[in-house]
Image (cartoon, rainbow, N blue to C red; front, side, top):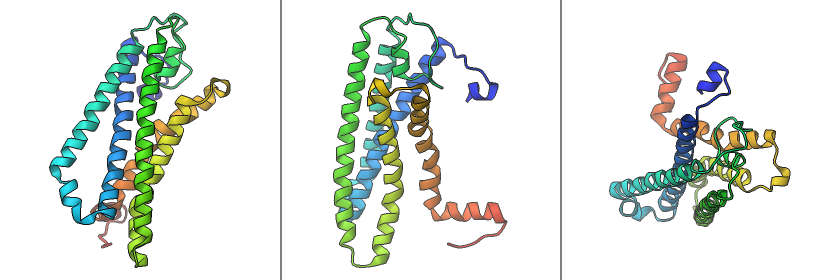
Length: 231
């Protein structure tokens, strides 16, 4: 944001490391929390009578703490490992922020294989999350289709589809950005993919989730029109 506002392409070495750390931290936390939200929808639709037991305040606190703790550890490991490598191939990144694959291109050490190993482990965990999400949504849609009333089905689908849309965009572009073959890599493609998985899903989150809250809808309507309307 600072570089965009001041029209500069420069960043300090420590600033790049900090940017990478927070990027991996929030990226990992986003994936973990989206997975937890998927579990929330699974329990609320498939096991509604057990919702209070399975997703009480203590369980939610534990899951949130686990998500942020694992994200912090992942960010710390990736940042420390990436910036422990000697970077001797210049100091220019073909990206609008400090991203691991582009930093590794500047390394002249075969130690970058350690970082590639971390990326593979991270991708494997993300794939595990993906399998869990797919299984959960298969069960959710089977349960929704058994709901007798059309209004009930519509309400359930409207709860799940925004989350599923953000999740699909986030995972598909993220997987492709990190696992695509080097033969089809280009600067413009890398930037476009990075925007899609790092900027668009977080920007859509407030719009998709917060505006579903009736009180927020009323507040936005009041702000826009100057009058209160019930929904």
